[in-house]
Image 1 (tube, protein in one colour):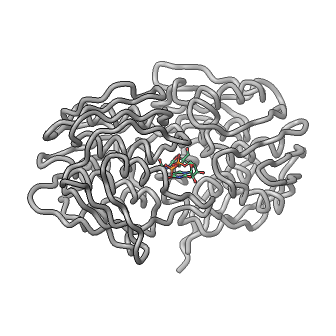
Image 2 (image 1 turned 45 degrees about the vertical axis):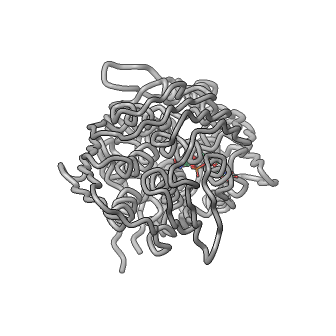
Length: 423
Ligand code: UD1
């Protein structure tokens, strides 16, 4: 298993290009199941999660060609397809559950294994399955698989009230509703930029969707969708992560392709901590206003609130802030696994349930640490960049799920970081 070695202390200066969003690309890819015609995604990120979704869709009968070094995915799914999404692939990634809605919409039935994913909480699928049930699906859980069947062979429109604005459930229902009979309304829908991106792509394929980006999305089903070419939106989590790099280390970094509208609540917290973010012609520029950053309190919330996927990285920043910060995690119940690792680097963190109190120290100290999930891994790299001495982050396969070329991107702005290949 590879590890990453970071030697802290360098200021960071230069530019970092931001990739297409993993969390947009993953729900966009299963849209290929909705049409007999080709769907091409441009600006796709090169990540192991994207390869897992490719493998899953291929196992269902989709043809997928990766072009331009993986940044273009040419997909096509015509003729007969397989409706069995196997445990061996699905277990690698929770977002595999996004094939359930499209398979049901296209074939009227599907057998999809319950997924795995990051170990950051229970992450059930009840909001997905309740919504599909309201659309006329009968769903049983047997042998670890969801066996789903649309009554009468086709899903029908329904008014669905989500108990929580689940991102994945909003996407699954949107995908399924494009080909259902009648109109589906999702109340308390998720409002993330990745939802808007999915709606844009589905509209380009001929779907009738209104209200994406608000809490009420209406989808009027059509009989068929056609092909399209769609550019994947920029990755706001990668953007926020690299915005934190000069905030932690000093220096000034421009994030190419970054947009303020993707990181509004996050930027408000950076501003309160003493970090300056300015828009440029090509993206966003970030630097510390002066000296040490200030403590700020952070609560994670669905978009447009502070993203849970940036909580670990923000904690790395606040470990060296002047004062005490309280981070409250409201989305996942078990998402402070990076805290014990940061403590090994000299951080002062007290976790009580869903709340972490961080008292800033002048300097972190390098240490061997272990990545526990995707966003935790990168928070340890950020902490290592700010620490005195050497930090070795092991189990970095988590990182490969969500960050492309992390070592090259950080070296490009002057970080002392390398990947160590281990068998
Ligand atoms: C997506 C993102 C993930 C991000 C999360 C929250 C992708 C591929 N992943 O995950 O990076 O951290 O949004 O912004 O886009 N829940 C239920 N029942 C359900 C579905 C969800 O109880 O049927 C709960 C989950 O356990 C969790 C919360 O709702 O506590 C948020 O989940 P959800 O918004 O669905 O996240 P994902 O789509 O899995």
